[in-house]
Image (cartoon, rainbow, N blue to C red; front, side, top):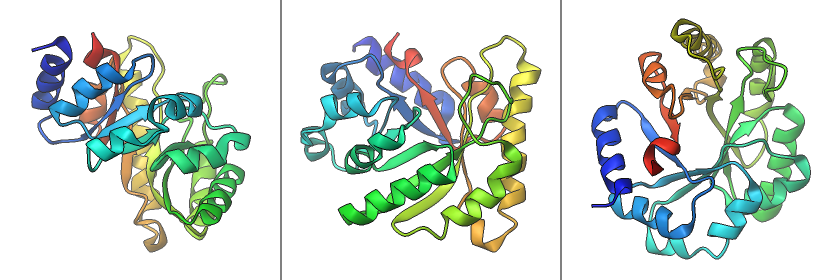
Length: 220
C-alpha cells in the first residue's frame, strides 16, 4: 500500500470514531486525493476557492465518489462567496455576520442550501481571522435566521506552539462557548466543533472535537 493509504488507516484507527476526518488537500493534486477517496475518505477541505475550482470544479470526483463533501476551511473573501457557494457543501470559516449574509444571498440565488460554521478567534491572536468569542452569540442568532444557510457549529485554530496546556485551553474555550450558546433552543443546531490539525489533533480530541482538519499527517 502507498503511504497515503497506510497513513489514513492508522489515523482512522487512532480516532476510533470519536470524530470525523476532514482531509486537507491543500498543496496536493487529484491523483493523491483519489488515493484517499479510494480508502473511504469522504470529507475534503481546501483553503482557497481557486483550488477548489481547479481540482473539483468539473464535478468528476463527486460523480465517482458518492457522498463526497467539499469544505472550505480557509478565509473567504466576500467577492468570492458566490463561487464558494457554487462549489462547496460547507463553508467552515465564516467570520462575520456580513459574510454570512453574503453567503446566504448567493445560496438563495443558486437555489441551494449551504452549511456553515462560525470561525472564532479564541486565542485573540491579531494575525488570525475569526469572531471574538463575545460576539458569537449575537452573530449565531442572526445567522440561523438567514435563508438557505444551515449553521452547524464553530471552528477555531490553536496557536502553533509547544505548550499543550495553552493549546487545550483554546480548544476548551471553544467547547465551553458552544456549550453556552446551545443552551438557547434556537442554537441547538450549532453543536459541532471543528478544531485540531496534524500537530494538535490529539489534544483537540481530548477537548471534544467533532471534526479534525488533517493534511500533512496523511500525505507524509
